[in-house]
Amino acid sequence: MSRRSLLIAAPALIASFRASRAQGSDPAWPPVFETSRSQFTVVRPRASMPQLRLQDLHGRDVVVAAKLGHITLVNFWATWCAACRLDLPALASLAGSRPDRLDVVAICTDTKDLKKIRAFLGGLAVQNLACYVDAYGAAADSSASVFRLVGMPVTYLVGASNRVEGYIAGAPDWLSPAGSRLLQFYREQA
Image 1 (tube, rainbow, N blue to C red):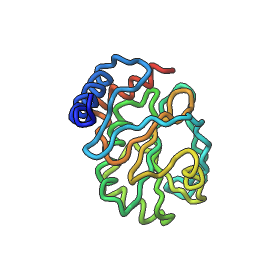
Image 2 (cartoon, rainbow, N blue to C red):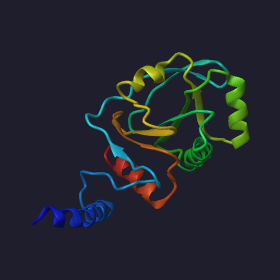
Image 3 (tube, one colour):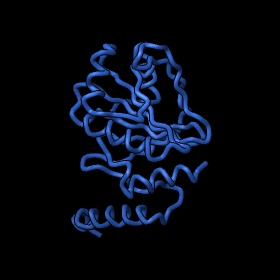
């Protein structure tokens, strides 16, 4: 096969591969979950989620960690981020709709000003969402090795075994059929 033929055939091969993964023909790989600009990206090696020393929205110190047997979505966002205005309400809806074995942790990375953060979240009418502030740089420190901030917002999926499985940047629809399939895939991996 010539190089030109390969270039012409490549899009069809990629589409075929995506379709077979989307239909679940390979149980070793998660189903495709994508937004208009990015897709869920599997990370290897899978690192354990570190405990994060953060502050809640009242200024109290908290340690956030994944719970064994639960899927944890760790979302990094900023008050200047336009896509975060779409992402945070969607994550709040997800957290409210699936409280069993699913935890959502939203971490503000751009400011330590609690009043500004509360005003931002109040303008979004976000409820049912555990929001924290990276007051001590814990998330920033771990971002170099575990949670790389490849965009804003970015959400990492931590599986039931406390291992970081992958991430997706942007504001995906976690309540969509594709989002539900991805979460179900990792629930079944426990």
